[in-house]
Length: 464
Image 1 (cartoon, rainbow, N blue to C red):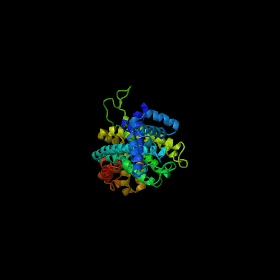
Image 2 (cartoon, helix red, strand yellow; image 1 turned 180 degrees about the vertical axis):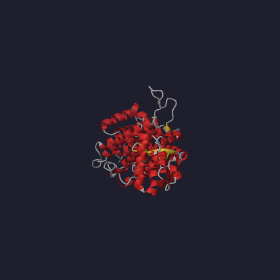
Image 3 (cartoon, helix red, strand yellow; image 1 turned 90 degrees about the vertical axis):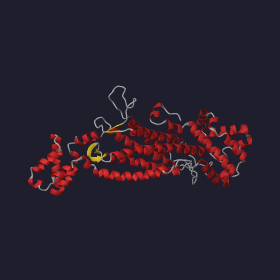
C-alpha cells in the first residue's frame, strides 16, 4: 500500500504492510487456493487440478503493479488476477486451468482477502491496546492518591485523584478490546456466494465447499453471502472508529495537561523528540499531536463506510469500491494513534508538585462546594450557599484564600462559631482528603478492569 509522506507520519510501517498491495494480492491467492482444494475434496474438480492451481497461487510469481493497472480498466482487481492465474496454470496443465475460480465471483475473492488482512490488522490493534492499557494500569496504581484538579468546561472545578483520571482513560480502551472482538466474531467471515449469492453453479456442494474453505482460512462460515449486506462488516469498522475517538480524547487531555502554563504532565523528550525548529525551549507533545491528527481524519472514513451501505440489489455499483478504499485508513489511523500514545505513556513525566501547586493557585475556590455542604448542616443550605458565594467573590477580588476568609467570618460570628467545628472545616481544604472519594472509586474501577483484562489476555481471538 502506497501512502504519502504525510500519511506515514500518522501511522506505522507494520499497519502499512498489512494493507500493502502484495499482502492483499497474496490473500486473494490464498482464497483461490483454498477454493480449488475444497472443490477437489468435494469432488467438483479433479485433485490434480486443485494441486496445479494451488501450486501457482503465490503473489511473488506475478507482476502486482500490472495487475493493479489492469484492475482499474476491468473495474475489479479480481478480474486480471484470475485471468493471470488461469494463464499461469495453463502453462503447466491446460485442463486444470478450466477449473480456476470456478463457481466464485470477483467480490468473493476480494472481500475474503480483505477479511484475511483485516484479521492481521486487528492483531496489531489488540497488541497496541494491551500495551497502552498496561502503561495506564501502572500509572493509575502509582497515582491513586495523587490529587489533581478536575476541570469542567475548561475551568478548574474540584479536586480528584490522578489515578481516577487514568482509570477514566483506561476504561474505554478495555471496552474497545471487548467490542472489537465481539464485532470481529461476526465480521471475520468467508465471502462465497458466486454470481448473485446463491452458489448455484456448485449446486448442493456449495455449502460444504464454503465450510471447508472457512476451516482452511480460519474464518467463520457466513450465514449467507454478504455481497450487499454490509452491516456486520461496517459495524467492525465503526468500532475501530470509536476506538480512535477514545484515543483522541486521551490525547486531548494529555496535551492540555502538558501545556506550559499547566505543566502537570510531559511527554518524553530527548533525541530530537518534540523540538522546535525556531524555539529551543519548546517541548512539543508530538505523541498527542499524532493521535489527535488521526482522530481528526477518522470520522470522514467512518461516514464513508456508512454512506456505502445502500448497495444496489445483489451487487453494488461504486459503493462497494468506495468502501474498500475507506477501510484501510481507519486501521492506519488507529494503529498510528496507539503507537504514538504508547511512546508517550511508556515514559510519561508526572509532576505531583505542580499538580498540588495548581490546586493551591485556586486559593481554595475548588473546595467551595464541600465547605458549603458542611455549613448547610449548621445554618441551612440557602444561607451556606449565599455565604460561600459572597466569599468566593472576595477571593477573586482580594486574592486571599477562601479557607482564611471563611475562618475569619466564622470567628467573627459567635453564634456561627458555636455551630461549626473549625478543625473539621479546615480538613475540607486538604487536597489529599478531597481526592479520597475519587481514589476509592478508582480502586474499585481498576479492580474490575484488571479482571476484564485478564480474561482478554487469556484468549487469542484473531489467530487462525
